[in-house]
Length: 457
Image (cartoon, rainbow, N blue to C red; front, side, top):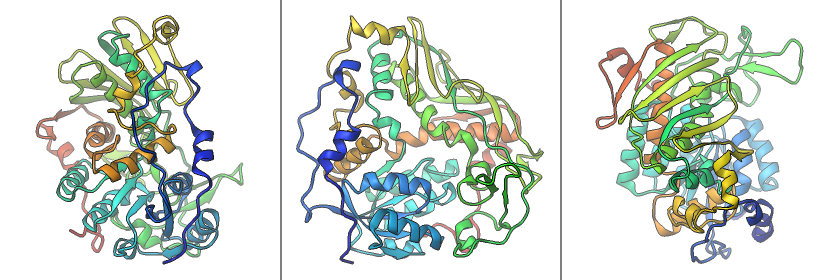
């Protein structure tokens, strides 16, 4: 395999995505470091597994740090489009990810498949000796997360989860630094806004699009018929149980709770830890609305979206001094309320009186660097996240969004989903990572794999 997708000037690229100017932020000190730029002979070679929307958005960032040499997808239309868009038609193409993992000339993989494939491909990639950048949510179930962490510890592979908000220096890390600096005092309440879930009409069975291997797209989840319909009023909008809309089916994902929840619940729980408080979850309770009827946690209708549309959930933590509220009907973002003040942060803004007070009483210059564990801070958001991934590979250390800390946060999202599906409180023992006193809820910590698609250990 001799062809690679050539990057643009990395220096120019980072200028366009660099952090916001110091005039708008509390300054931070960049740790002393060597440049992460590599000569052509030193650059890693990577493959993109899953060439859909998220794959084509994130891979161009990865190309600034490593050479994209292979694409893998079960949809030939995606492969053709991705090859032209990302690689000028020069990449080697694969339908089966196992062929990618068997290649000794591929150092790492970016996993951007639908959620239900993440854990299987990631585990097998680590066992094949590959480092991996895996999109969130890392898993479909709690028990998958336990296995992912076990394999990561056994293999020592570097895995960066695609929760790029952990590499947002001007917004989310800035907010965490404010909290760590004591500007809010002891946290009392957090409100996590993640928007309402998707809605659909009844979706008819349809012919599988040409070039799509539907059986392999389903992979580990139960066999089901392909469904597709155009919106009656908008020809540019569709409904399906396949590409793009897989998040609205519990068979494939967890809806908004594991989509935006994987981002914002993550930052919220990091904020609790930054305040020096206990972020071990003990229960999730609340209400949710679905557009289909459920019995024993399972949807009774298979022809429309079935994840929670609306929810008002409360997460309790071990010491009982802080509560987190996850809602669909408030601004997307995280509200941190403490004894001394409150701040709100999302991808567009960081506001609140403690933020305004920084003009006359700034944080320490290294406050944000400490939140980032003293690792190099290059770029911002996705570029910084990939730079951190490469730093972790070069130094064989845990990246900023490692599988272990990610799963603690994601388990809260999974527990929230179980609470929504069963319609009752779910209690959790963080020490044993198990559901307490509810056999039905505990059984939902795992799912069987379809025959032929078990994890290859």
